[in-house]
Amino acid sequence: MEPYRIKVVEPIPITTREFRERRYAEAGYNQFNLTAEDVTIDLLSDSGTGALSAEQQAAGMRGDETYAGARSWFRFREVAEELTGYEHIFPVHQGRAAERILFSALLKPGQISVSNTHFDTTRANVELAGGVVRDLPSPAFADLDSDAPFKGDIDLVALEALLDGPEDVGLVLMTITNNGGGGQPVSMANLEAVGVLCRRYGVPFILDAARFAENAWLVTQREERFRGHSPREVARLAFRLADGCVLSLKKDGIVHIGGMLALQDQDLAKQCELLLIATEGFSTYGGLSGRDLDMCAQGLIEVTDPLYLRERAEATAYLADCAREAGVDSVRPAGVHAVYLNAGRLLPHIPPSRFTGHALASELYLAGGIRCAEVGSLYLGEIDPSGELITPAPFELVRLAIPRRVYTRSHLEYVAETLAGIAKDPGRVPGYRLTEVPPILRPFRCRLEQIKP
Ligand SMILES: *Cc1c(COP(=O)(O)O)cnc(C)c1O
Image (cartoon, rainbow, N blue to C red; front, side, top):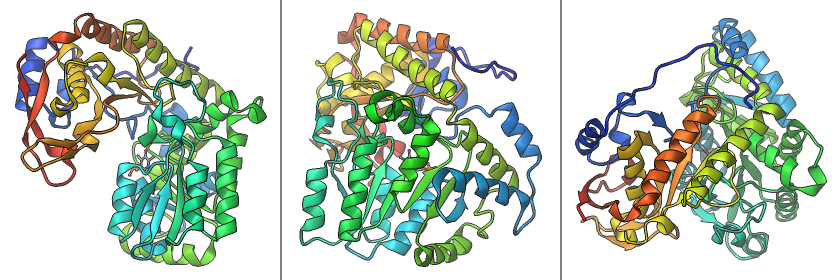
């Protein structure tokens, strides 16, 4: 059960199918155009959508808004240093600001950033800095149904070959957990091996540690050597294997806004600090208020509570199990922050060119007012300017991201029941066609229409 009780509540909109049909048509069948008022259960993102604890609210009240050297900064730095061990800690307004600053300072034009999988803003910031991204996910990820414990690992053989070859690698970036790769965890053995390779080839090793606590939890559950260790111990060890991190505090900081860049190397840190001051704010607040810094510090303490992590992981696995019983498969084994539904398997009558994942996500909204994100050909496929699919994504998935401490098991049961209703007669679900295709950031701004069966 949840190791907390509810003290503040907020009503959620309960709507009719007729209302949702109208609103979704007005929204161009794109869930990013829906508003809070249109959505009953919002599983679009786990970023900045968590519930604050009473202690975080109290910490916020103690926030010190001094411009330079605020007390909040020292409290934040103490917690961040204890957790990561890195000497140079910089607060930023969110994860992507840390990415932009680090890559601008670190990457020379044409250099490669290699990763288990780059998150989408990470990829964009590597490219904006003139770098080139290379994803080397573990071959185990290709089998969605296998119960391999660490499908978020990097492919070490391919990584060594790349580092040993003629290409210029600027950094190795390990995303924990692997958000682009089905939310799957990365093993400590994999991180250690990456650390050895990075030192041998003299390449910086950076963690994209948005879900460092969830990764640490899964390590304590799935990696023999770390059974019985606390998630905080494992997280602290993981940070110490790398040379620094970029971190979105909107995930495992359990705050509504915040991020962090932390580094060991002094010269690199000095370069980053100047960029930080020029674009985010002075080094002791980095674009955050004192209030935010104090709430982040408290969140970074609470998030490694094993009772909290156990309940969160079990709730996600429970949703995946209920969906599976209802006939809807998802990427196995279940991760922590999200369930990735296998829409391609549920809706074989809808080809990728008619956006299978989007069709399932749309039906979840129309049937139950549940908002979520497609991770399939609409997002990752190659699409021509007229909206025709040229190359499909490898899988047609739908991500149900679970906000932290927000929904109860009965909310998740409602989601599972809605899925069960769809799975009873999947043949009725219609496909979609693009009517407006923006040249970049397609999922956010495209418009579609339904193809009536
Ligand atoms: C959310 C996220 C980011 C970007 O962080 P923001 O706080 O949204 O800017 C980077 N990497 C990963 C893995 C993320 O999940």
